[in-house]
Length: 196
Image 1 (cartoon, rainbow, N blue to C red):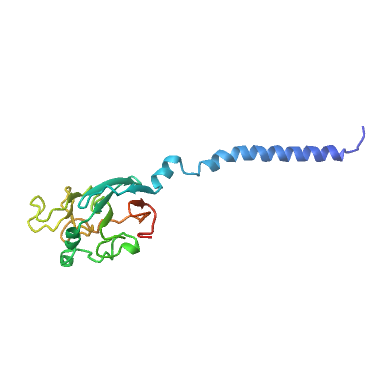
Image 2 (image 1 turned 180 degrees about the vertical axis):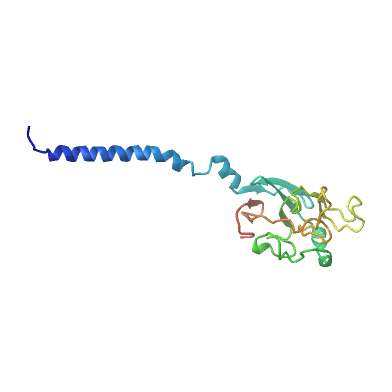
């Protein structure tokens, strides 16, 4: 027997073993890494939603869905905007200091363009869907009702900017989701920017 070692063969076997192990590890780790990616359904749930508001008549409400939540879009009339004035004393958070909205929506109208209101249509009390009760003095709400949103589950009331009234169960104003106007007739919900 010879004690000679074939260095070239040893080098080949070492390289082949390392290469085979690396390829095997890559195949083994690929499904694990792929599981970290969000699914197409998850991506769609978080994706921005484009809304055509060209056919939304003044005084009307449109409902769309974004991230599994109802989004209310209201084309407010000058009369509806006028109803926002003079009621601060009746509101829990009239300046939206404790409420959820982008910084550019922290105004009386709580919107990028005063004529368009965009809100998450989920009551901040227990998550019910508030009804649109835009007509002032609607007797189904109250005789001094200025117009806005009414939650039928526990009686929470919100004005036409989604600001909550005092002495109702809801603790906060209705949230304003991030959105921006792509044009005068196209609204992108889920992209922050307002009137950019």
